[in-house]
Image 1 (cartoon, rainbow, N blue to C red):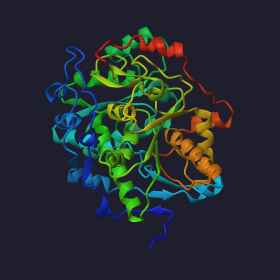
Image 2 (image 1 turned 90 degrees about the vertical axis):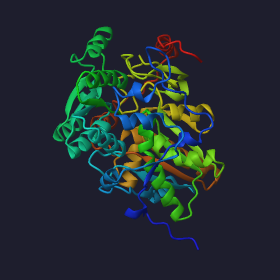
Image 3 (image 1 turned 45 degrees about the horizontal axis):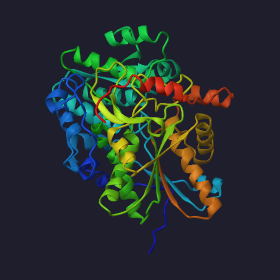
Length: 457
């Protein structure tokens, strides 16, 4: 007998995942190894330890264990805001007059307003367990910096955040939340680090990028005793921690016998997308089920759809390891009029390999269309979505309209990664008709590609 599906599917506290899922263990084609920028040899745990906590370095390189236990202290922290609800978008379905069934996994029920807290508490926990004084990091739109400042305050760790300059200026309230939780927030590129001064000299007046902020945060970590660098996206350890999203989504769907046809997530560096889709990709890899999985990225920073699959630096300052990924070149800096996060020049090596192997798809959307979708969603579903999440909303709505036109009754699941209450400058520009779309030209991308390292194939 089919159970009636409520607006919100809540799990019991006892159903909170006890393990993170490591999708690499089931990938036939593993992501290419990180390379030491000096020797071009694969990085070892020992190589990574000066930058990362030891346990996180081990997680970063683990390609064999499919399940990694979540420490009890982290699970107890998760219980403050997890399990997160899976919501049936009945009102949106009605608005679109679609036969499609639409669900979204809502990750905004915490002060950071996003999914980023899932990994922030894990990384801060391992830093504290190692006896460190503090951590450094970068942040783009500010969700990650906010989440990390919360986790560090909880564990009494110092937190130093390098925030992309354009976001630092556009999102002052996000900055102030970080400071309220005790973090030091510096606009990047700054004049406080050697790499920051170099970037400012090479790109006068630059509005910054995540690649710039990463370079500064790594330099700050390695230059202070008792500090390590932590990050909010891209690397495998982060995607691992975020799999609580997909595991909870699986459990909620299974409770009601729901089988999704399509899973959609926004894609910047890959953390929320990887967290949502990894358990479902695992089913595909093991031959247990099949799904259409769509990564949605901004047309102004299209790493998957227009980037090159090659080894590149993870940061603009070229001090971090080389990763094989879809990249626009580490020197690529998105247009300042790009309002959301999703500003990273590359994509997670896991996501890149899955895309390269045809296990997932990718599309781009322009930001005015994204904000149109965000506005409609807010009016009918009652949640003001983050600009990043709204990329997924745009494509979910487009796919639902296709179902109306074809009569197909597809089940669509997308990730609502967070709220947009600190993104009101962007919403103001949209409401005032001042928002513009920007798509980099082939010539601009070729200029960035030309500076990429010539490493292997």
